[in-house]
Length: 453
Image (cartoon, rainbow, N blue to C red; front, side, top):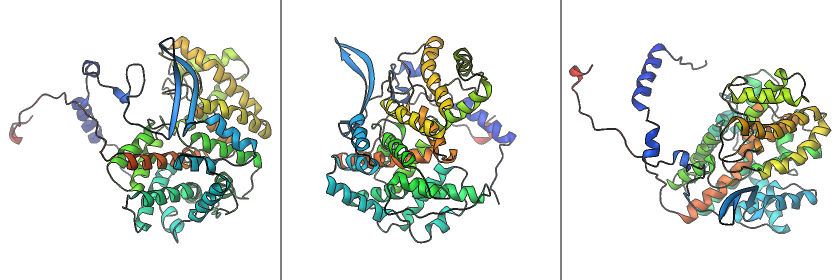
């Protein structure tokens, strides 16, 4: 039986009372110099901590003035371009190597990388009957919720679940990095079978394959994939693996870790953050927006027709009427997102291989036109460019990943960054994170029940 609770007129009335008594005058944020969203008036994040895990650069000081620059991303001080060029030039997978770098702060030598791979392989298993008793029971239509539930349930199988000593937390983190692909794919397979009525496939991961290869192996009925597909999925995982301490889900990891709680609760909280359409769920919106665009725009090569659709998006006259061109713009980057720049080269190769060059042409046109149109239509304080979500959804569609797994793929990568930041929080601080909120409600008097209106 499905549990349902409808929004009744009574609930709507109570909500109106809540809104009436909870709405805050927007001008008060300026009066009290409140950094809404933990950002200043220029959109810069409020400095809330220190990190060595990664760094994002979007501006530089020239002649004493701060000016935008091409976006740069560093993992443990090394440019992301150099890291990706390293493993791609040697025609090998990069996820495991870059995970080692983020977790331990240095690149592994050949022996260390081999040992780490063996450790991940050894951890790539779930408790006995976990798939049957947990994942297959009450499958969710949302894979992020399914993933979070599985993570929280793993707490019950861990005899040292609450031990936050560094070696134990590292053990837990490595285990979660290893099993996230299984939890994600199996959660989808359960949903696909029990909810959508499709055939059920549960393929065990192979000890001989990389993380990216195993994802494709477990997902596809015939377990087959091409080297190009695996290589591009591996690159996608590396590019999504980490992005500074200030993004919403990583900051959540720091906040929850600072309370002294267990690893499973911490990662489940981070998953809840990543699920949001303003964060990890953005790539789904990009794909859905383009699906709508393809239906409304007759000639995909006509710049005027595409431009007209983009303007309708901004005027809340198309797609979801939110006034957004999804995949364009970023909280930090302005001129370019280095992840999108790196990704685009391989997106074109995959599009050629899949016969999707017409789609790629439309994406490229929107990437070029959207910043111009946003600049004309909106008063913005910084430039706008395509972000990594702009192309990642397109890549996942060409890899035949179901829409339900787009955000879990993000999680399979970002669990590495969350783990590195959880370790960093536990190593360096012992204070609970507790920002201040100013109360602006005047004091009131208590009225006896019989005197209330």
